[in-house]
Image 1 (tube, rainbow, N blue to C red):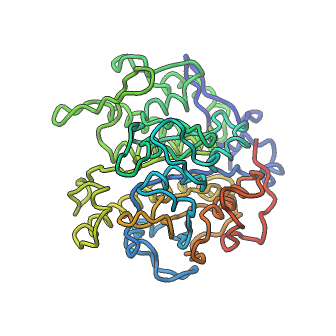
Image 2 (tube, helix red, strand yellow; image 1 turned 90 degrees about the horizontal axis):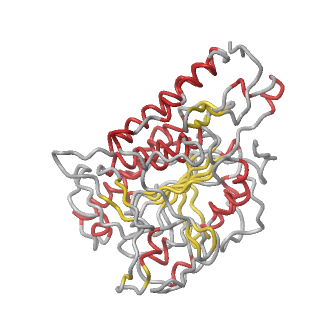
Image 3 (cartoon, one colour; image 1 turned 30 degrees about the horizontal axis):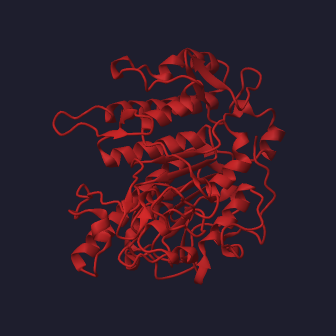
Length: 460
C-alpha cells in the first residue's frame, strides 16, 4: 500500500541543485485524492519516427489482414509487441508523385503537401507538419512544446541528379511551409535540455569538468524521497537509476576510442563544433532512451526522430549478413543478394522500434503503461527504394492513445488512401482541433475504438 507521508506534491515538482532541474515522473503523491486518481487521465503523447530508403515490401507487408495476421520477416523483432501496434498498408502520399528521387517524398513525410522543386532557399513543403500542429496547440502544457531528434547533421547543397536542394532530406518537422525545425543530434545537448535549469550550459564545459545533473540534484531527491510512500519511493529510485544509466552511456559514448577513431566533429550554424557518438547503433539507442525520459517526465508530448537523413548511404556492416551501404542496397535492381541485405536493414530498424516500445511499456502509468497512453508512428517516405514510389508506404503505429485506438491488427486500406487520413486520426486522438490535414479526406475508422473519439481532456 502506498501511503503518502506528507501533503501531495505538484505535478511540476522539479529536483533542483546548482543548475539542475530534473522533472519527475508521475507519482501517486501528485494526485490529491483517490476520487481524483480514478477520474484522472494520463496525457496522450505522440512520436513520429522516420527511417530512410523504404523497404522490401515482400518481407514487410503481412499477407493476412485484420487481427489474426502473421508477422512478416522484417517485422518479427516486434513479436513481443504484436498486440501493441498496427501495421498499415495501402496508404499513399499523392503529392509526392510530383518530384523525382527522394526529396519530394521525405520533406513532406509529415505534411502530405506538395514540395516545391528548388535548388535555392525558396523551399516549401506546403504547410505545417502534423507534429508541429500538435505542438502549436498543446505545447503550452509542457516545458518543451516539442522535441526533434536525429542522428545526422543537416546537409546543404544541391542534388544535381534530381534538381532539389539537399536541405529537404534533413527535416521531417516543419513549423511552417518554409521553416523547418532544427533537430538535435548530440545526446548530451538533449540531456541538458531535459534536465538543466534554463540558461545553464553543460556543453560549454570541458569533458573533464563535466558534472552530472543527477549528482547536482541528489540532495533534493533525498529530501523528496523522505516525503513519499513506499511505492513512490520505488518509482523515484527506478527513475533516478534510468537517468543515471543514460547519463553514463552518453558520457562513455562521447569518448574517442583509441583503438578505432575519434567521434566525428560536426559543423553547426554559428561556427560551433561538437562531437557526437561514433557508434551509430549506440547513438540511436541513447536517443530513444532520451525520448522515453522526455515522455515519462511529461517534459513534452510531441517528438520526432530521424534515424538518418534522406538518401542515407550509411554502411550497415555491423548487422549480420550486411556488407554494403543502405542507399546502394535500396536500389536492389531485384538482385537477390542486395534484397537480402536490404531486408536485414529493414529488420534492424524494426528491432530498434521494438526496443523503444519495450522501454515505454515497462513504465506503469494510470491503469496501463506509458505505451498505452502514446502513439508512436514508425515509417518511411517511400515504399520500395528501387522505385522511389510514394504509394503503399511502410507505416506502423504503436500505442492506444489512452484507450482511443485499437492495436494488434493489419489494416489494408483501399489503394490511394491518403496517409494524411492516419495523421488526421492521430491529431484527433491528441485533442488537436482541425477539420482536415494535408490531403486527408476522412478518418481511418478501423483503428478507432468507437465511431468517434472518446471524450479526452489533456492533463495539464
